[in-house]
Length: 203
Image (cartoon, rainbow, N blue to C red; front, side, top):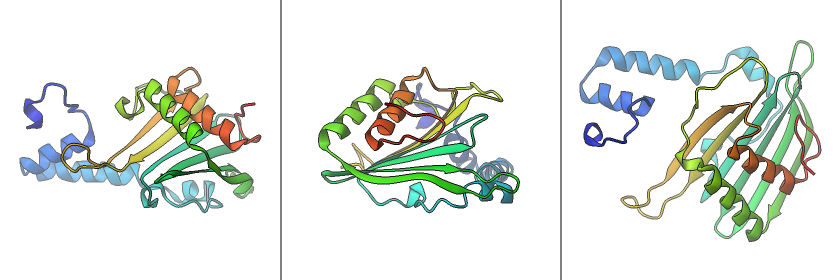
């Protein structure tokens, strides 16, 4: 079916896995499995970078809808992590700014907050996602560099019908996203959280 859909993205790993499985291509299945394990496994030094963070893994959040933004910048020791969650008609916003571990400096929480936001703020955030075409963005846009900043975004939305409106989830990463519409979504949450520390702040 996917072979006959002209607009289906055949460059994604899920398509390649499906194709290899369908054709019983064990060699490619093994290569894809090794690739997935490599990119999703943190080395020991990478695990230590954020060892002070006690946030629930995004995939383990139980909610109707959730988004997580992780922002870091070159020449800045801080990482900002913001999670916004919807449970029915209630909306929570959690933010953490931490200094990642480096050399003899341990991972340290710099700022942390957890607040509830109103439906108007949630609607404003949803509008920003629509403007940015969040659910239509590819995981990677091909732009990379050594310096600059990085913004990673995870998203999940529970569906209402397995056939017409199933659950959906996505992940995207952008390098130096300052002028991209998706950065406005992150800035909006920063503003709601009143976070005043980190590599980037808004008034």
